Amino acid sequence: NARMSFWYKSRMISGDVLDIGLGGMMTAIEGGVNPELFTFGEEINDIKIRISDKELKINGTIRSKRGNMVSIEFVNIDEQNSDALSQYVFERISSDASLQQI
Image 1 (tube, rainbow, N blue to C red):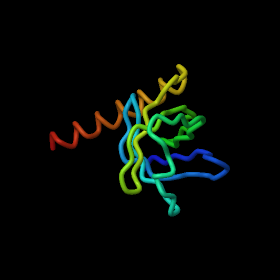
Image 2: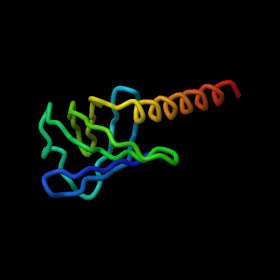
Image 3: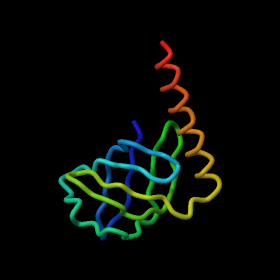
Image 4: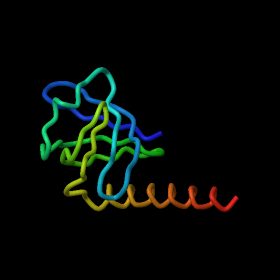
């Protein structure tokens, strides 16, 4: 499973990535952190996302929150991180499609 983490107001925030695409991700925040802490439209810098054997570093903006789930829109992704994310998403879609054919 993909994981993510970032520093927020001197606290390390981490969690599982529930869904990810080229435009953003939905994540389940761990450790009893209340998502109400975050503000809609707030920028989060240097989000580390571990997918497969790669670690991406991406900036994002808070777009929604519910329960322990927070959605983050990716902004200003550099080419290297964009390529790695595109490859990961393509591989997931390809493996899902092949499973549906069975």
